[in-house]
Length: 197
Image (tube, rainbow, N blue to C red; front, side, top):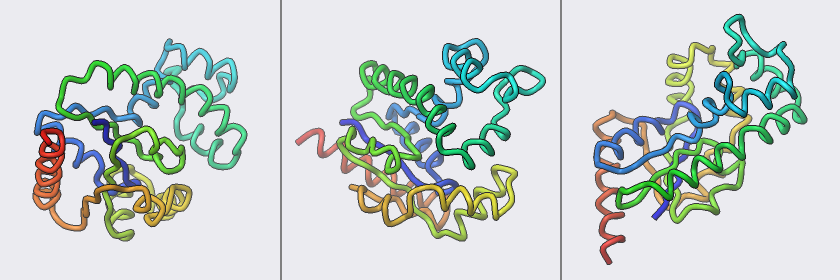
C-alpha cells in the first residue's frame, strides 16, 4: 500500500512523517528530493544552468533558491521550465523508493499532491490539516519569512477544501505534538489491520 501524505506549508507534515518513521514505516520526502535534484554537479543542476543561466547561482555556485523562487512566482513559463527539470527526477526517485521499500506500507510526502494531480498515483491520501492562523505562525517562525510572504505561498497552494476533497484520512494538527502522535498511531493501527485482512 502506497500512501501520499500532504498538507499546506506549516501544517505539520514533517512531524507526522517522523511519527510514522518511528513506527517503522518508510517515508520519502518528495520536496527534499526536489531540492536535491538541483544540487551541485547533479544532472538536474547541469540542465538548470543550461536553461536558466549562472545568474541564478550564489557565490558558492549553488542554486540561489530565494532568487529562483521570486522568478517562478512571477513567471509561469519559467515555473514550467523548472518543473520539467525537477519532476522527472522526483518521479524516478519515488518509483525507486516504492520498489525498494520493505516496510508494511510506504509513505511519500508530497506537499503539492493536489496541484500536480499526482494523488491518483496513491492507494490512500492523508492530509495534515490545521487552522490557517496556526499555519502562518508555524511557517513564518520556521522559514524566516514574514507573515505576508507565507500568506502569499498559502494562496498559491491548493486550498484546504481542495486538499480535503482528495483525502482518505485527515490528521488535525491544531493541538500538541503528542496529540498528533496519538492520531498517527490510530491511523497506523488501521492501516496494519487493512493489510492483514
